[in-house]
Amino acid sequence: MKAARLTSNVCLEAHTQGMAPLLSVLDLTPVSSGQQPGEALRHTLDLAEATDRAGYERFWIAEHHNSGAFASAATEILIALAAARTRRIRVGSGGVMLPNHSPLKVAENFMSLEALFPGRIDLGLGRAPGTDGVTALALRRSREALAADDFPAQIALLRAFAGETPWPAGSVFSGVLAEPRGVKLPPLWILGSSLYGAQLAGELGVGYAFAYHFSQEDPAEAVQTYRRHFRPGPLAEPHAILGVNALAAPTAEEAQELSLTAAALSLGILSGQRGLLRSPEDARAWLREMDTDPARLLKKARIGTPAQVWADLQALAEQTGAQELMVTTYTHDPLKREQSYRLLAGAAGLEEAGAGETAPGALKEAALK
Image (cartoon, rainbow, N blue to C red; front, side, top):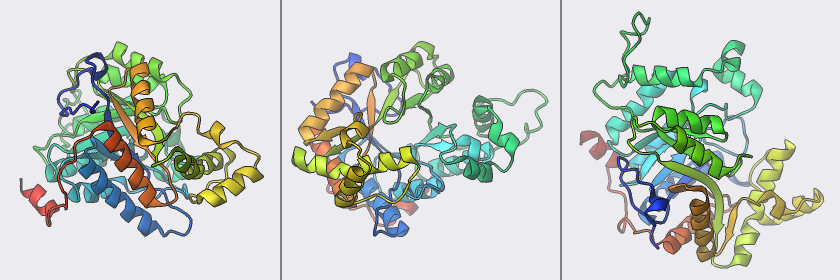
């Protein structure tokens, strides 16, 4: 069964139509041991090209700070470079942590991206800091901002600066508009790991992406909450994405071996011993030293042959009601990460988007359209 192909303006409830879920990619620019950060950044751009050719729906890039393991801090820069090197895949943020930034600057960054790559940019917004408390303070620059619980108000400012919604009478910002003027803000998505984000996305009438891969909430309840609270807004119909960790390899044994890297990464996060991605050999030794079963750390991940992983992902979408699955894959070798996405695309029957060298001067051509 092929994954459904939907335009950004048509958000049908695919699971009720008997269609397979859409497949997308979330990348955090992981840095492996023995690798320079610049290499990791270039591998993210290579992966954007590969998943574009393979037929994935979206390629989103996360925002993390002071993490050691992830180099995806300058999210908008990577989005611009990825969009310039791809042809058709939607490129966006998974997500921009809005409280870390000025809503006006976020509007201008993403309206500029939309002007350069019309119809191919997504703006995913989150409210977590994407880092530790001290680094969050450095980003937000005051303890008052760090303690503020004003995510909906920040979204309202963002939309008003972009000209999407009118300013309240008497607002001090009523004469301020984001540049470039006349460009629409890209489609908004609320990212969340709790039912709060689900309800907010529904009330705003925007897309919702649930972080199943690390949330403690029931994913089906999160999607149902989103649909129950949905009121038509920028979207006429609700559209729910489920984030999931997955890894495919030619054999189940190889997939399990490669997944040791992800297990060690998870253990590092849980134990406060964050670091670069370990090789499967180093990961196995450390997991034994810590007396930790990798299967316990990866109980939500879908790991195996391409057919096994695709079957598991379809079942997950059916169980939760999500129309789209956004896959994150961790391997020590970036070529194995690319291989996993390519194999999964083949199992899902995604249509190759052409033989695919990106045309020279893609950034210039997109800007002139």
